[in-house]
Length: 119
Image (cartoon, rainbow, N blue to C red; front, side, top):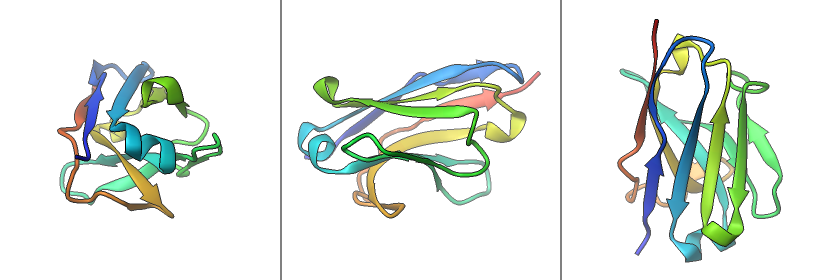
């Protein structure tokens, strides 16, 4: 069974930092690129950072230079280090496996983790 468990969200002031974690089922993790998505109120869910099984990374323009995605293959976990947070980063953050940005398990999203950036 496919399962994603996100954690680490919270409320921070602009300029602050958070580190998100996502634990994924072992069979998913070892075979696929993984990504962090986010969904802001009233907007569609979007891929913001991805990492291949070999460690190559990609970022959307809105987070490049501020966010860092990484993975721990031994723990079947990916991370998102978020620095210099802005109010526009406020969203629910999710993870999933993906191919070219398209989530592979679109019917098995986790509960997500809420990130709120506010003064």
